[in-house]
Amino acid sequence: MKFITSLLVFTTLCFFSGCDQKEDFSCDRNAPIEIQKEKICAFARSEYYRHYVNFQTGIEIEEISLFVTYSTGNFTLRVTVAAENGDGSNLRELIKVGQEYTYQNNEGRIIFPGINQTFSGKIIFSSFDRINKKATGTFDFSVESSANPSAPFPMSGSFQEVGFE
Image (cartoon, rainbow, N blue to C red; front, side, top):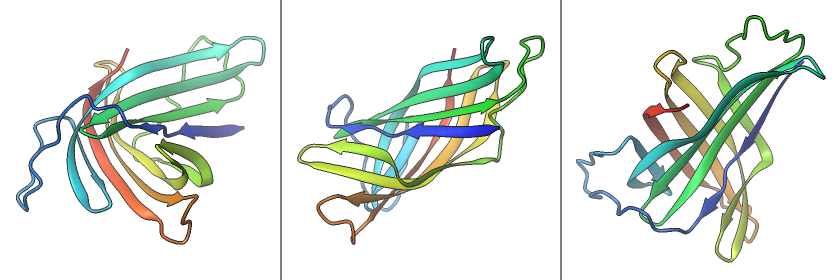
């Protein structure tokens, strides 16, 4: 049995200013993102990384949570993968490079002032280095407003060499 749980939380806390919005967009931070076709320079860091076996159930779990901050808000990307029959003697690499981890329709939530929104989409790790503890990948979501679900807007981006412990 394998399952994936995911969560994206979006709040309006202003930690960093955005980057230049010109055609020749470049980002000096590790997480360039795009929301409704607006390019934004963001910073990603790890909230946590865990890899363990629940000895009561025998289920092995590997999970990571990345916090992304930009000029007008922030959100969290979480991926959890679990597999049965973990004995703890040799932890398996459950989070796989190139594997698509999906959020189904209305599975994730974005909390934004005045509007509750749901989304679907995917996260793909292009690198997941457990030795040097760094993750690189992309995400792509279609966000729907509960006020106007017929007009979803895109939210996508990448994160590079985000350290985790």
